[in-house]
Length: 285
View 1 (cartoon, helix red, strand yellow):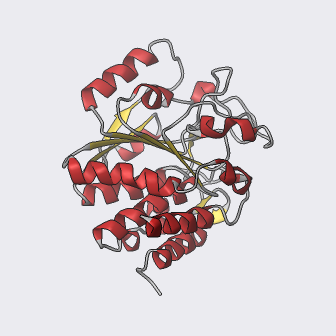
View 2 (tube, rainbow, N blue to C red):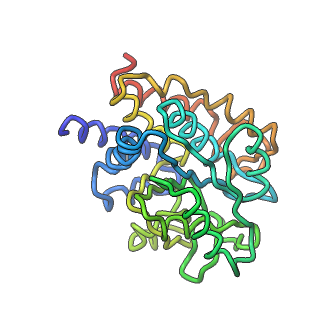
View 3 (cartoon, rainbow, N blue to C red):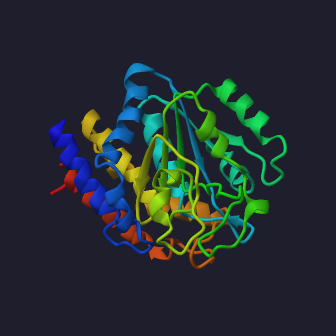
């Protein structure tokens, strides 16, 4: 385990090395090894519960559609888990759920109007009986119960509530975020006041922070590949995934333009992170 712990530290450092939104300042507050622990949760599903259901929440509303950050990582994780024998289901609201449903197993959560959302969430958890719930770049509720984007704009009317899946799941939960307003950031709420955001208060058992949330998914996949002796990261093509999403109407969350980027960065940056993680885990020189 010491070797895995060292590997986790290397991965965690790589995920926040660019630091566009202050996650490197948040990193010291988290107990080191969070990538390792999150990946172990998924590994336990695969190893001890063949065919385990994993719910993956994603989708951040931007100008009437969805952004590329989140779905790229969710799809990469979905494909990896399915390859390893789990049954992943992407949970999101419209328009993303409609875009993905032809190719992926999905579950729709209602956008806005939270009157009956608790009952809907509890029913969904009972129906799917997940062994793990993962959130990748999902808006998290603030102290006032609303949802806010990186600009501080209230996006509650355009946001589907995934928070209850994290709060009421009877299984381990994992969250990935990159700015402080995502699900899982309740774990570090006391340091987010330093950042110019309206922070989220929803917690998770394990939180992975990254410069781009998609990359946090790659951190978990790196460990799964290491443990299964397979170069699983080599199977991921971020550019192809973002092209698929762009054709479905996605936008970059920073530029708000339909383009082949994530959080204002070219997809080559995400590929560079994958290459670095493959080096860390010994699959590339």
